[in-house]
Amino acid sequence: MAEPILRVSGLVAGYGGADVLRGLDMEVAPGEIVAVLGSNGVGKTTLNKTLSGVLRPRAGTIRFDGRDIHAQPPQDIVAAGLIHVPEGRKIFPDMSVRENLELGSYRRARANRSANLERVFQVFPRLRERTAQRAGTLSGGEQQMLAIGRGLMAEPRLLILDEPSLGLSPLLVEEMFGLVRTLNTDGLSILLVEQNVMQSLDLAHRAYVLENGAFVLSGQGADLARNPELEKAYLGL
Image (cartoon, rainbow, N blue to C red; front, top):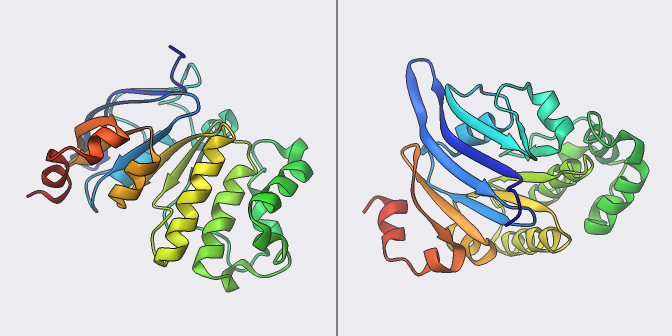
């Protein structure tokens, strides 16, 4: 079996005197889509911040691409190829679409900027049509495309997508999940952190269900979708 591109062991993290994550163990293999599912407030954002180096873990290890990264600063984690597309898109609204995309290659893959820009435009033709447009004037769906495109500019080894369907219409949600499938078909490893349970499980090879800072269920996506404990774990029923 191939070495996981991401391996998390005994991860504890939090804020102030409170632990939010309580001993998480998880893996992402090369070429996998792994979903982390859970409702608001269960620790998904804390997990993403910790994996990205924004929040320093209190205990445990994070190994990415064979190296320990749990003590590294965010810029070094980005340079290694772990790229986080944050919840809420976090684009620069007063900059153009092209400028936003070019910033994605600031720490990594700068030499391939032109080729990667063309790749992003092939994935998102609408962004090509709006290269000079201010990013803040894009629709919600186009802003999400821009956020993912900015992540792709860094040639990610693993792409963390934080709530990519948030705030999108049902039609755009379908389009977004289809895009994630296409990116994975091209070989990209993806950690999909979502509230949208059934569509995520339909897409993911494996999934973890997070509740109160701990994983309460894990397994193959299709198996979890049929698991009668899923509703109890996810909704607290």
